Length: 473
Length: 90
Image (cartoon, rainbow over all chains, first blue to last red; front, side):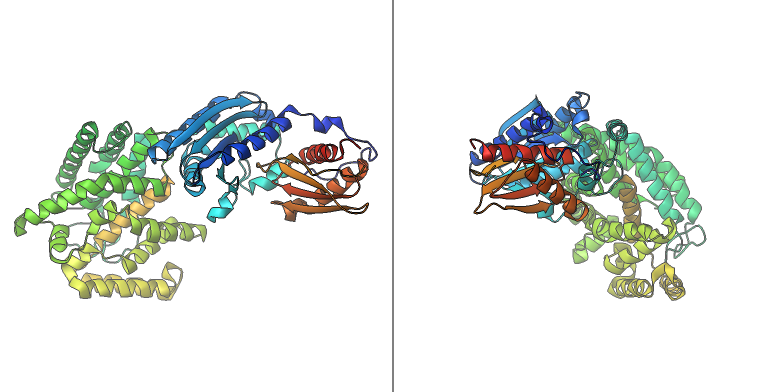
């Protein structure tokens, strides 16, 4: 709605200015077609219609037709990848601008989820408006999936309010749309830099009970902060390499494909070289072995998603990384059960004795601890105004309180783990880094862990993973 | 002009509005407004609806407005088309 203007001719009959607009007629026809197409779908089928979320003056200019086509192709590719039967597909330029039609054999809820994937994850997705209709002609919107309404391209407020009020002028909207189209691609180089940054930030966070910080060796006699910097520096090329190999995987429909298997072998070999470079740089100290594996998998996943035309999000990245490592992790654990006891890693020994999965299990399940514990805690901490250091320190406490840290379990047994979890939870309960009681509890925990020679290295790795995911999203 | 038959104009797409007019007993016009931006623009939508109905001389009608965030010019166009369709032949 426009704000009330000067009173017009209140006694006109029917104002033809408004009635005969080809764009309005085209939208009416599209609506009628949507209902009739939906009605002709088999039971359980659904219809997706894609249009541009831009005012008519920009939709009709032709400048965004190519973007609309690319978005529609991405939607159709997503449908096919997810195994939804594509019943019909059509893209055309109508009098209302570009529009895409995709009839699917899957239900409206699954179809809308696919649509949301494109709207949220595609670099240009924010320009698309993808509506889902079920076979009875009922629309299924974001609100039906419990999601908040979409936000405005220009100001980030509720989109419907800005659109109805014509809150933003054309030049402003055009500039916003062009910024979206110019969005930088998520390159292997950028992915690698974010991973390295996560390593450095994780090492820099202070306090970290039992762990190495710039001011403390924690429970470690054999390493300090500079050992961590040396390890991180040695790994600098590895993460971009993993992202690059992951990008190669985008060309294969399945990881079973021999070409994909070859790439996965190269990924494993590159990971072993990275590990060797780390040990050489640190004088044989293991600073980042777990992260070579888990951040490496996430970088490969991010590279793969980006190469498929998507902006990797925390969720999509974890999901894809989980799928990538599942086969490899299973193979590793099977191999571990055949190894002599002396050659086992701490994680393998634990898996053999108690079935605890550790870093490989976490990765294979798509990093649930980082996604469900770490990331929400980091986002809420930053939103509450904590410094990045303090927000990350609280993420570590939250992870320690809930995760089975295999490093602590291996050295301290169930009692050591229980001590860590209870004390980390207590420190958070006292207000974490924001209160003096919370900080005192963190100091006590640090001293207690040092006295017990315990170090929550598994949680520290998840802290770096959380940091990476937050920067990526 | 009395509403003679049920008629619709518009759609339930984003930034559009679906107007449905049904004949009803008597001379009055009864307006029902639904909108995703009711809080911000509900009063304006109602006053535009009543103004367009009055300007067209509409009578004996129930007007249902289902707004999905339409611009005012779109709302006016959809109302006028629906009125035209509902009263055609009078």
